[in-house]
Image (cartoon, rainbow, N blue to C red; front, side, top):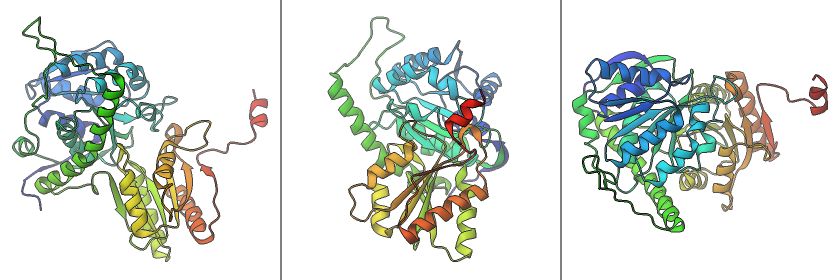
Length: 405
């Protein structure tokens, strides 16, 4: 039960993230504008200009330089934050890799957008899943605020010391207003103590001071993987500790379930599509269908054991994985591949279907998720599997489409 008083306001997901950054007492922010991220750092700049934040804001010439600046500030031992998305995130790729190698607990907000359009899909963040960043997908502006505060707590934990991405759907969450509870500075300080760096690698006050440990790459990568393993438990702990103070928890921090107790079939969703999926599950439950929902919150580190535990406990007959991305050449999405790998060694594993939804920001609506649910229920009842289903457009015959050119 929460023990705090909060202000209730109607704000966007971007403003919720900016408010959390202010409450986190971040010391250095660098950013370059890109849609739909720009309002996050514009709001932070407004806080700084109004004297509400004691923060150095670096107006940078691009995302590659932005991450380099964040890397430099991070190794000096201060709390750092930035935000970007889409082509900006891809432009920063080289330095994303460097940040994790430095063990810099940088927090990045990413309102996901397609590389091909201004609207939401996960083609920007999925290629960065191998760069050593923790990646957490959030559903709502409230969760964006709460997760931003948890992100600093997790990333800066000395068992982790890895960078952290908060991911939320561009426009759908970033620009849509919602009722959000705003915690006080006093209560945030109870949850998030001042940043205590494990080691200051560069001291700006001493030009001769550079401390850099460079173990061999195999040892370094092994240590990074151990840090990711540690992050699973630290994410769970942060989720529970946050709930004790503010009364809000998000599943176990890694996964969140809905009406799975007697389900024969389940959908797996991420981010904002989950709200629509809950409505669909309720509609089908009223018709007597045994279907439930699993929301994947933490994509990296991937909740392998948690998916296995759910399958062993409930023995789902079929699982439909819904995602806004695709791995070309494999005909499935990244999440589907990770879940299938996680469950492969189980004797009682479910039949699985992949649903590729919302690419380029296409709407994910109730009829689409009803169709997906019916396909998963059919598989649960018959054991027959469709390899994948694409929604949003008919692919058609390649020759026919090329003829139009």
